[in-house]
Length: 190
Image 1 (spheres, rainbow, N blue to C red):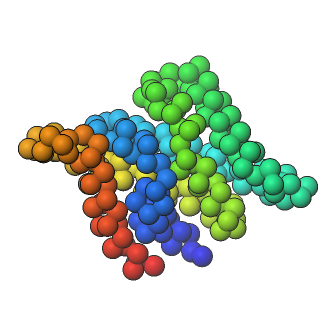
Image 2 (cartoon, helix red, strand yellow):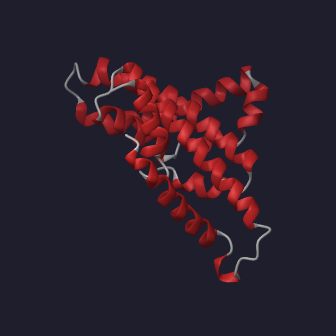
């Protein structure tokens, strides 16, 4: 599969939020303001790429050669949690400005199912190293795009007259459903 096709499929056609329903918690929780949506999206994309590289190496250099595929889930969860903690410690000590810009988002990424879904899909689809990285970048781009679109709509909804029973999460879920339908139109692209 072509790298461009993998990127477009991950970002638009098989978007992690609108198609795979992964990462819904940060999607609904952080999409109230555009600044926080961009911050969370950047942090998730960064961790997706790093986790994709690390888990691909572990899968192909440790789990497969030693016939340990049954340890995949536990290993990948531990790797993701460890990576997030290592990245947080490094940023806190060496890149203070970047650490402050990520803020609370780095610890929240540890429990983001989109990251685990990404690394497991890399294994299921049997992507090579470069395809895995491309898939991670495309998924991250799609994640950022979904968060920014949703945050823009939610900021506009604050000014709209929404019935009291639909204010907050109910209208956000309705909008998310409509966005998922809109993104379903990309399914004919590839």
